[in-house]
Amino acid sequence: MPETPTPASPSTAPTSTPSRADHELSIDAASRELLGQVLDKWSLSVLNELCEAPSRFNELRRAIPAVSQKSLTSTLRRLERNGIVERRTLSTRPVSVEYRITPLGKTVREPIDGLLGWAATHLPAIDAARQRFDDEVLGLGVDR
Image (cartoon, rainbow, N blue to C red):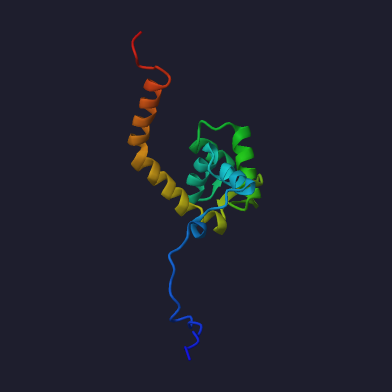
């Protein structure tokens, strides 16, 4: 009589090659919205400053001179709403406010650094691709 196969124990179970589904990222509306809010122009600049040290509003304005007061205010509120930045009222005369990165906010540093490193590494190839596109598709750079 043939032997009946027995289930493999966890330690002897064969390992399978991960499928594409195992590595597929969910790109849903909530993720897109969050990434858009965290990776926008002013958020990156604010996070860069706050990762170094807590700052008051006017210190951030001086550190990021191109940002308007309105844009900085909305950026800080968005980052605060997402739990990435914390707003603290300081008991000074007059009362002032300080912004600091939260523990959750600190976790975004590594992936942002990775994206910035990727951009720095591949920017020459991207610039060349843009130039080829402009030349071929848009007809720029061609004397007429």
